[in-house]
Image (cartoon, rainbow, N blue to C red; front, side, top):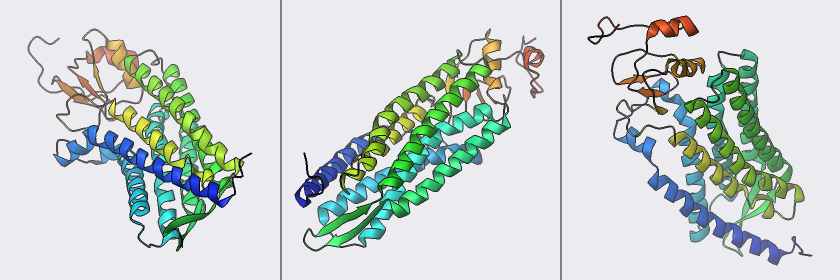
Length: 334
């Protein structure tokens, strides 16, 4: 058997951990460089940051928190400058944990939108679960690792890692992801929107996100319980967080339109003229339609429907929707 506590084995584990961090920095950096859609639209002011865009804050924080954590760890490990190791490593643990939390929150916001007008108890329970997850981020940052400067290695070395704290955090993350998947599918099913275009898209994205994060978060939760050594306890933590952020970002970006004339964070979908019931089902997801005869209608859930023309009277009769009509209509309109 491997003597995991042997100093030479610990040193090998630390070397593997450092090389893994370099790989993850390159892998995630590639993702950032080639998928800067939201960031670029904010920089070029095609998308203006408004209170309605508050939902992209977890998206942005998650991406750049893990990027900063990976970059700082790699640079410090390569240059070997003497720093306040314990403060630095606790900060890195907080950034990584917060990125993982934001990845889950990106999907949790969708479940909140689906359930907010259907069952307040579910909304409050989901909100409380998110608060609990955020609290664990703080605990993870404070207790997960302890580090000090080593004169022999001329670098920071981990002297303690809390296996119980890490196990609790990653297990909670897995359970949160599973809960959000169930709530999303059940909510769409109750609103008879599961088979709609947007319902299929949301449920499939949640399913793939959970499948990918389970593959990385479960091993990240198991290793701390084995408590092989201080490095093995955290060996898969960066990998789990990086994969979670990439999958979550892909889910958010897949709902962006090919163009963003208003610069809103949107879910883009084409709607046929006859498909009134499908559009009304989207309203059942908690979407307040802003009716217009223009080519684009912006919705409160950051969804944009292109070429939308809805007969308001049909929507009134079927779903009791209150809409505002423009004073003038296109020629030939009923």
